[in-house]
Amino acid sequence: MSRKILFTSAAVIAIAFVPPALAQDCDTAGTVGTGGSAAAGGTSASTLGTAGTCVTDDGATSSIGSGGSAATADGKAQSRTQINENGDQLKAKSRAQAMDQGTFSRSQTKTRVKDGELQSRTKSMSHVPGEKPAMDRTESNIVLPNQ
Image (cartoon, rainbow, N blue to C red; front, side, top):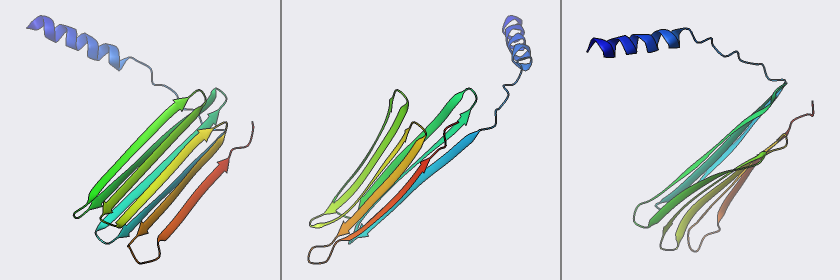
């Protein structure tokens, strides 16, 4: 038992002497984000996406996030999100949809970070049979200056 305490104490002492990492200020930074929702009858769907980039002397660091949800009283609801990293590009796509007979609500958000350009766009739509569909679009774009 004393041997466990000795190892634990040594580990705590070793961690206590690790120097903290120094944070760097961003030379250039940007964030984008969009979101949207739609509702009709007993259905609703919402999605959102956000991304950010920080450029320092050592290079760029980026993050991305996305999500969505859908709900219905009696029908079918589904949502899915994909996030991909490919070389110097991050992509996220979320889609949510709820259907109850002919009534439906859907929302889709696509977000991307590539080469100092940040983009996010959301399209939402709802429809009740016999009525005009309701649609909405939001978009956000930022191009960071070259250093």
